[in-house]
Length: 155
Image (cartoon, rainbow, N blue to C red):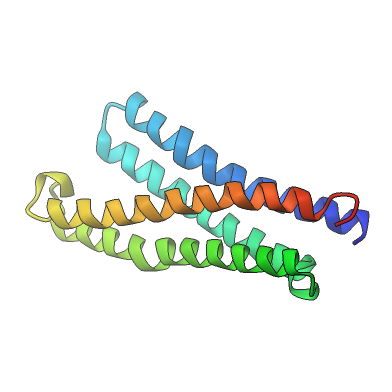
């Protein structure tokens, strides 16, 4: 593996997992603590989660192209499956669950969805999205650790 390839992989892993953790574990909670309007906080967080999702999918594509798909070593194949699982969770969240949440918000309009009869459905889908996001954060931690081993001096 070339030094450039190693560096690009490390940047992709760092950018992806770092953005997952920063957005989900730091920025989103802070938005809800700082902003006086929960609807505004949710709207801002939703937009930022979308950016993180697209960034993650781009990083996953980069990682797959750079090395993982070309390696037959067992460790690299596992990393490939891990990256693909994380990309799938990201896609499910962004293209599967987020449209449902947006639809529920629109159906509740002009009311806040959490003040409407759709509150239960919204809370359920939001919980599913949160669970998948936290799972992706955990898998990201595994990716960081295993990637660092794989690109080491013998990677």
